[in-house]
Length: 138
Image 1 (cartoon, rainbow, N blue to C red):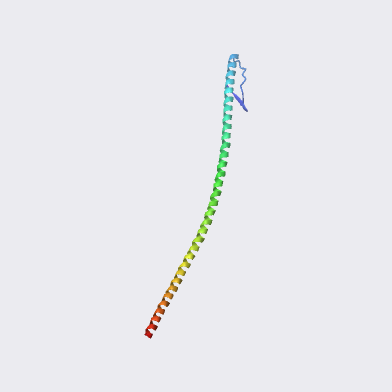
Image 2: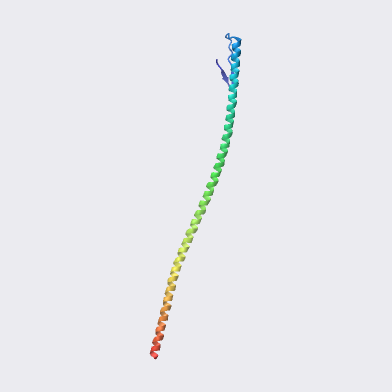
């Protein structure tokens, strides 16, 4: 038995070799049943293919959505990175200002210490001078 398929249709061979009419009819019924089964399988496969196609479109949509989310997160990361760089720069400036202020405080303490030492020495000299003057008068 030979079955010819041409673009989705099945053509049963036409034998006129003397088979009995009953066997030809039985063969034809069998071929029609096989054809019906094959057509059902084709329809099922087409439905599966459409389902896969729809699933593929859904997956592509999800992938595109995830790609967009990733891009958004990458942009946020870039913005945060730039903010951190700006903050680091500001911190560096503050540290520099604090260091300069500490140096000024140290210099001012030294100047105040020298001034106080000078005032103390002048007071001591004044007391000695007063005492010496008083001793000379007595």
